[in-house]
Figure 1: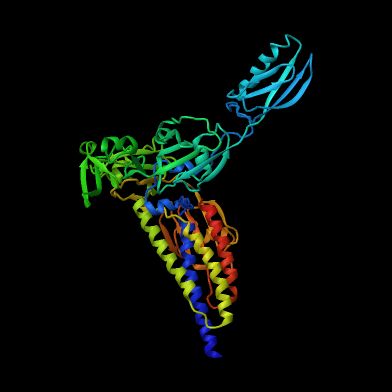
Figure 2: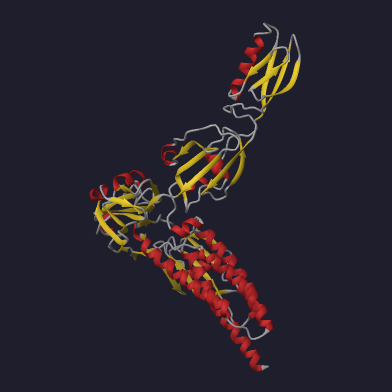
Length: 545
């Protein structure tokens, strides 16, 4: 029994140790990264993107919602066909209230008036034509109301390289895009966006190349008949575009080859592009070339080639941004190799409000490293939680419940984003560090407020007092709570620096934080501690934001 109790105790302490490490990481991210925010979820890729790596040009044409033409006869551009229903109301010298059908010859028959040719008329023109016909019989005193009730539906077959070949209903004035959308769109792996045919029996009615529509909005319209067939052809020759291009897609072309000049019209490389890498096969052997922009214009491209636009010319300048308390512009284009103090001379600030002695920098490269380290730590914690063995059935149940709770924390931590803060000032002196592309110089605003939060009775903000100690500020916030770790007091400076200790000097604008204390010997308090820490973390997130 003693051995089992010891094993249980060791297991409990191990879980609490792992949990404490994880909580510290989450705590640090929430409290010391006020600029952190949730990641925007990456858009999901279609199966075609997974197979081919690059989507075909025009793939997004069928990915969203598609508003087709109305099927109820209310489309003003709908043209009447045999079988359509027309409501007719006449009153005056005679009274007529009937629903007329367009017959096989394209006419409707109006009592007391005779037949009226309506086939091929636009729905919007129908009332005018009928009224003119009635006026030839009844010279005056006859009112007429005409309305197209229903448009005769037709069935069109869609086949070839589409997602869902089949028979689809519509009306004669629906566009070819409407029917393709109903069939799930063109298959992005094997379908052609440049070879779409409309067949009527064995005769070709129309052929579509969708590239002019995608680039210029040009799309010819035809009148579909019942039984027409839309056939999407198989994919022809293609060239795949990557790199510095406004259209990084897979482009299709007719014939056996195309030139780089023709491809540029579709791919639209960025203005900074200087070189183009081309790879493929020639005479069934691997082939590649690294060309200048002018050389690429006359280069012959074949089916399956891959083209990457690159910028190899060294850029003499780089861009940095300014945030916080400053005047004037917030973006500067500077020479590469410039240092911080050189740039600060050009940044206009109001010395009465800007805290220029506590400047800090947010750097992309540092943020990337911090993010990678955070993700690796989270993965290690996740493995420990899921692989720690249980000694008994009771312990397994407890561990299972705790693991679910911890995994929820892990999912929350995965969404935090490191800001890459670099501390460059201390004791009023600013380090003259080398700047990098994309750096953000943060100039804090002067503040006489001290914020106290964490394990205190009344978290609050208060005015700075030059003779007050850190314990004085904590006493003004109600003193330590029962769960406070009085040996771990944290102060975050306006310049981003973090100090931990018991007798720290508090300066204007500082944030004081009291950590919670965890007693690993009291397992029954574990759930309460986690709940309190979560509430604390939420409060910290609110304060820092």
